[in-house]
View 1 (cartoon, helix red, strand yellow):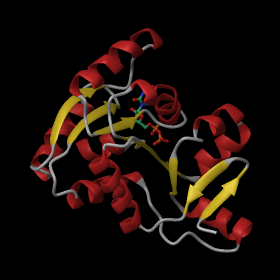
View 2 (cartoon, protein in one colour):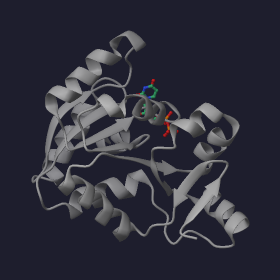
View 3 (cartoon, protein in one colour):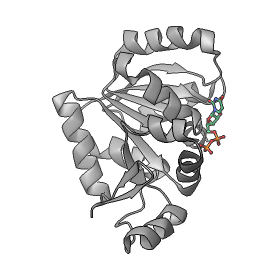
View 4 (spheres, protein in one colour):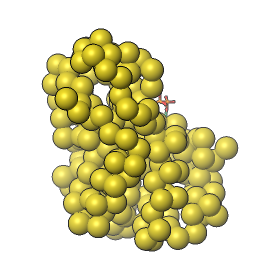
Length: 194
Ligand code: UDP
């Protein structure tokens, strides 16, 4: 089996290159993909919280870390072929994409996404950050946040709200978000901003 299935949560067993190929293909065909990096903590939350598990159903999930790898060994008798976490995968994706892509950075404390945007612009001059928004907005502001994303219509929306919030945000709103690739990336913007 090329995936781990546990209580309705499906984690694909992809290599990094297979995943990068899938993401490029989705972008080229302008299809929407919601990508999640599933670590043991996220899997545990999903197993304990049916609403969270349900929200992950529309995601392409890949395996992030030793905990989920052990789970895979226990439940399907094999380890995942590769460990795929957002902190490594997103830079690899941005470097591998030679076609120009537009990015929207959503999440982290005020000022962090702007700082990350400046660094991404320097590292990946072929891409363009077309919008940023910090991750500390109220439920009332959600529609305005989505309107800002849609006005920018990015190829890639990086959602860095921590989990479960980032996956819940993506699951709840993806259908009305004008972006192709939506990824829950945890603390990536903090790491990038330095
Ligand atoms: N974060 C946010 N809004 C919130 C809570 C967290 O934007 O309401 C951001 C936080 O600033 C950080 C990122 O989410 O940049 C990841 O947070 P955390 O380290 O708690 O999550 P994890 O890495 O465990 O997913």
